[in-house]
Amino acid sequence: MAHLPSLVETHLAAAQQDAHGRSAELVVHDGVLRQTVLALRSGTELAEHNSPHAASIQVLAGRVRVTGMSPEELGVGEAVALTHDRHSVRALDDAVFLLTTVTSQPGDLRD
Image (cartoon, rainbow, N blue to C red):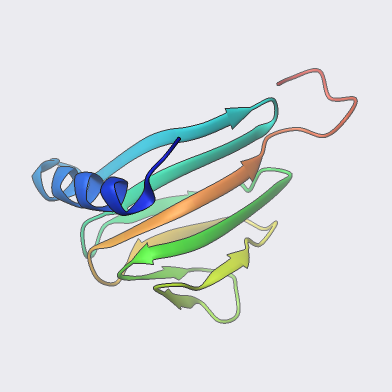
Protein backbone atom coordinates (compact mmCIF):
# COMPACT_ATOMS: atom_id res chain seq x y z
CA MET A 1 0.00 0.00 0.00
CA ALA A 2 1.31 3.45 -0.93
CA HIS A 3 1.49 6.05 1.85
CA LEU A 4 1.23 9.32 -0.06
CA PRO A 5 2.50 11.73 2.64
CA SER A 6 5.69 9.65 3.00
CA LEU A 7 6.10 9.46 -0.77
CA VAL A 8 5.75 13.25 -1.03
CA GLU A 9 8.63 13.75 1.42
CA THR A 10 10.82 11.06 -0.14
CA HIS A 11 10.38 12.22 -3.72
CA LEU A 12 10.68 15.95 -2.99
CA ALA A 13 14.03 15.24 -1.33
CA ALA A 14 15.10 13.04 -4.25
CA ALA A 15 14.08 15.67 -6.83
CA GLN A 16 16.12 18.29 -4.94
CA GLN A 17 19.21 16.10 -5.34
CA ASP A 18 18.54 14.87 -8.90
CA ALA A 19 20.52 16.49 -11.71
CA HIS A 20 17.32 16.77 -13.77
CA GLY A 21 15.17 17.95 -10.85
CA ARG A 22 12.75 15.05 -10.83
CA SER A 23 11.86 11.83 -9.07
CA ALA A 24 9.13 9.27 -9.79
CA GLU A 25 7.78 5.98 -8.54
CA LEU A 26 5.07 3.69 -9.90
CA VAL A 27 2.92 2.98 -6.84
CA VAL A 28 -0.07 1.14 -8.33
CA HIS A 29 -0.08 -1.14 -11.37
CA ASP A 30 -3.20 -3.15 -12.09
CA GLY A 31 -3.61 -4.20 -15.72
CA VAL A 32 -3.97 -1.01 -17.74
CA LEU A 33 -4.25 1.20 -14.62
CA ARG A 34 -1.12 2.94 -13.37
CA GLN A 35 -0.63 5.48 -10.61
CA THR A 36 2.71 7.24 -10.38
CA VAL A 37 3.99 9.76 -7.87
CA LEU A 38 6.14 12.39 -9.60
CA ALA A 39 8.14 15.15 -7.92
CA LEU A 40 9.56 18.11 -9.83
CA ARG A 41 11.91 20.76 -8.48
CA SER A 42 10.63 24.31 -9.08
CA GLY A 43 11.12 25.30 -12.73
CA THR A 44 11.53 21.71 -13.93
CA GLU A 45 9.35 20.67 -16.86
CA LEU A 46 8.12 17.42 -18.32
CA ALA A 47 8.42 18.32 -22.00
CA GLU A 48 5.42 18.25 -24.30
CA HIS A 49 4.15 14.71 -24.74
CA ASN A 50 1.10 12.73 -25.90
CA SER A 51 -1.59 11.77 -23.47
CA PRO A 52 -2.61 8.15 -22.84
CA HIS A 53 -6.22 7.02 -23.38
CA ALA A 54 -7.24 8.51 -20.03
CA ALA A 55 -5.27 10.33 -17.35
CA SER A 56 -5.73 12.51 -14.31
CA ILE A 57 -3.43 14.59 -12.15
CA GLN A 58 -3.82 15.28 -8.43
CA VAL A 59 -1.42 17.79 -6.87
CA LEU A 60 -0.09 16.61 -3.51
CA ALA A 61 2.41 19.45 -2.88
CA GLY A 62 3.28 22.75 -4.56
CA ARG A 63 1.84 24.08 -7.82
CA VAL A 64 2.10 22.95 -11.44
CA ARG A 65 1.14 24.35 -14.84
CA VAL A 66 -0.29 21.95 -17.43
CA THR A 67 -0.32 23.47 -20.91
CA GLY A 68 -3.38 23.18 -23.08
CA MET A 69 -5.83 23.08 -20.18
CA SER A 70 -8.09 25.53 -18.45
CA PRO A 71 -7.17 26.35 -15.82
CA GLU A 72 -3.52 25.67 -16.53
CA GLU A 73 -2.36 26.13 -12.93
CA LEU A 74 -3.17 23.54 -10.27
CA GLY A 75 -2.40 23.61 -6.56
CA VAL A 76 -2.45 21.28 -3.58
CA GLY A 77 -5.61 19.19 -3.38
CA GLU A 78 -6.74 19.91 -6.93
CA ALA A 79 -7.40 16.99 -9.26
CA VAL A 80 -8.45 17.10 -12.93
CA ALA A 81 -8.66 14.87 -15.97
CA LEU A 82 -5.77 15.67 -18.29
CA THR A 83 -6.24 16.95 -21.81
CA HIS A 84 -6.11 14.42 -24.65
CA ASP A 85 -3.95 16.88 -26.60
CA ARG A 86 -0.18 17.12 -26.36
CA HIS A 87 0.78 18.93 -23.18
CA SER A 88 3.66 19.68 -20.84
CA VAL A 89 3.84 19.94 -17.06
CA ARG A 90 5.99 22.57 -15.30
CA ALA A 91 6.56 22.89 -11.56
CA LEU A 92 5.84 26.46 -10.44
CA ASP A 93 7.04 25.51 -6.94
CA ASP A 94 8.70 22.34 -5.74
CA ALA A 95 5.79 20.03 -6.53
CA VAL A 96 4.57 16.46 -6.19
CA PHE A 97 1.59 15.01 -8.01
CA LEU A 98 -0.17 11.70 -8.46
CA LEU A 99 -0.56 10.81 -12.13
CA THR A 100 -3.24 8.20 -12.84
CA THR A 101 -3.26 6.70 -16.33
CA VAL A 102 -5.12 4.09 -18.31
CA THR A 103 -2.64 2.87 -20.89
CA SER A 104 -4.97 0.99 -23.22
CA GLN A 105 -8.61 0.27 -23.92
CA PRO A 106 -10.41 -3.07 -24.14
CA GLY A 107 -9.38 -4.77 -27.37
CA ASP A 108 -5.94 -3.09 -27.58
CA LEU A 109 -3.06 -5.49 -28.02
CA ARG A 110 -0.78 -3.75 -25.55
CA ASP A 111 -1.02 -3.83 -21.76
